[in-house]
Image 1 (cartoon, rainbow, N blue to C red):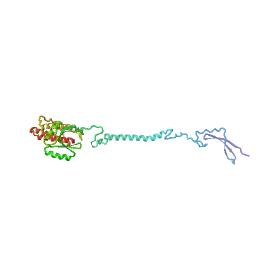
Image 2 (cartoon, rainbow, N blue to C red):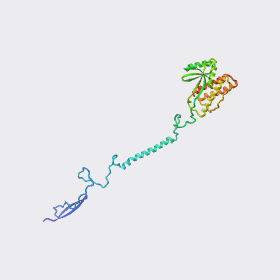
Image 3 (spheres, helix red, strand yellow):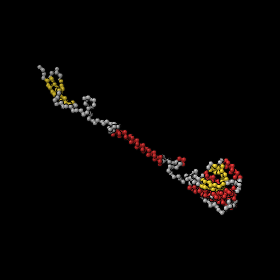
Image 4 (cartoon, rainbow, N blue to C red):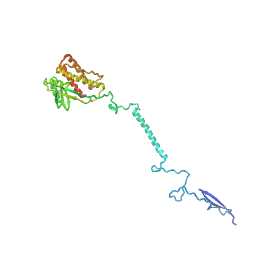
Length: 317
């Protein structure tokens, strides 16, 4: 006679799904215990998946309970990740700040001599752009001057003019040579006006020398600058020469009623290129003092020689 069997129902919840099993127990050792799965009328309908992977068939998606990371793009309409932007922008910002700081430090060192050396010294004496020229550097002076001279000839070459000068010196003249308009002019004397130059030319012509009277124009500016004191001295020397031109010409023609009124000037140090003009002025003053004592025409001619030589130096100024 068969031994009775005991039957039990077991409900197992697997991943939210209830499964019903029937457990059959038998006292007969020849009958093994079996566990059968039976349909359960109380089996709940499985919940639908939250999302389905395209092309995934009927596989269910696994959700680990964490938030799905957002997709990050570098362009398009999808906003980039703030963390990624911060990670990229921070080194750039640090580099900009560091470069700016070092740039400011370097600029201060250059402009204000941060290294202890005086920066900004001009090369080759060139003034700073927009800066006023200092008094020590000086300003060029005007060479405007109209002289009235007695002309003794004009030549196309310097050699021919020099040959003529040698002959005139034998006759007792002390002529000079000036280059004007690519020609070489010989001058024998000076006067204070064109009319006086004409009369002086006639006076020289009586001695057997062919002469002319002429206005000689000097123009332009000096090649270098001069201080205010030097400019004042230059103008004073020119005025003195004009005085001696006028007075000596009249005295040579017999009018001895006039006398020069010399302009006084002084320089602590005479520049090299003004030294000859300075010496000529001193010589004219001494010769005139001697002439007042001796009244020799030769002294007047020596003063004329000084004024002519001054014109040569003036052209070189």
